[in-house]
Structures are given as structure tokens and as C-alpha cells.
Length: 228
Image (tube, rainbow, N blue to C red; front, side, top):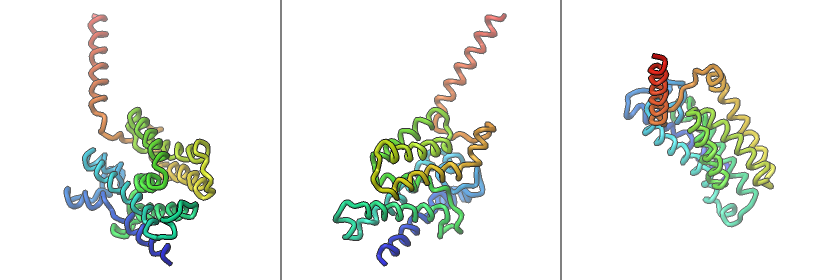
């Protein structure tokens, strides 16, 4: 009974529609009516900019972490490091992710749950979460596609759990595979847009793009001068 109550609390935590509340309160719009129509951090980056996108992402990550850490309110799980505790943390985290995707407080139309999912992993296994962040940042720096960064960090998560850390929990191993598959499936439209060259890039590395643009312009000018 206590576990069920915690799952409900975790769902309600996940249901906090951060991007929707931010967009309505500070900008007078519903983020779901702009950009990709998604109520997540990625679309907030695109529509409202990196400042608000970062705030939304931080809160959404915190939702997943807080939900998973609810396990420590039950003494039978808090006193011993056990597989049962890990399994319940996964369940609580998933409840928060479901809340983010189908938020009670925003008409059950939310985001994709990637940031909230990461928060859960951060609470369960910080080392794995840190490595996934490294993959995310590297891919984001190289491509500026948040969607691709999310997909590849999810694949990295499965590889880390299955082969690098070789976790003993069968549930955790299955969960890692499910995460990778879920990220691929929920980003099908993004994958299609990337292949077509129409996927939006987040405006967080404009200085790099401006530098590259200036280099191209200088090179074109030099080529023009040499040709003349």
C-alpha cells in the first residue's frame, strides 16, 4: 500500500508541466502551440531560448530524481542497499516519466520525458548518468541536435548497464534496453527530419557557427581575389 501511494506521488511530481507554466506565466503563450508542439526542454530551447530551456530542463531532471528518491521515505528500503530498492526506484522514476508525458495538471499532453528519465538514472546510478551526459554533450556540440543527443545517450545507457557495469538486476538490464528503444521510437519524427535536413538546431553554439561562417566568407573572398 505504501508503495502504491509513493507511485501516485511520483506521478504527480512528474505531472508538473514546467515548460507550459513557464511559457504561460512569463510569455503569455502555450509552448505546445509553437515549435514542435512538444512540452519539453528541447522545444523550450527552440522557442524561448537557452535561458528558459535550461531552467525547464533542470526542473524536469529534478522531477525524475526526486521521484526516485522517494524510496528513502520507506525505512525497509532505506536501511539496506538492495535490488528491491533499485527496482522500486525505477518504478517511481517511470511513474514520474509517465506523469511528464501525460501530465495531470496540463490536460495529459506533455513532453517526451527524456530529462525526467535522466533525473531518475541520476538518482539510481550517478556514474552512469554522468557518462550519459558526456555522450549527450559531445553529440550536441558536434551536431546541435538535442533529439540525436538524447537518442545516442539512451543507447549509451543500455551499453553501460549491459556491458560496462554489467548490472546484476535483470529488471534494470531490461529497463536499460527499453529506454534505448523508447528514445528511438519516440523520436521517429526527429530522425526523419534529421535525414531530410529539416530538424531544428538549438541556438546554444551560435558563436561557433558565426566563427565558421566568417571563415567560409573569408575563404570565399580569398578565392574570389585569387580568381580575379
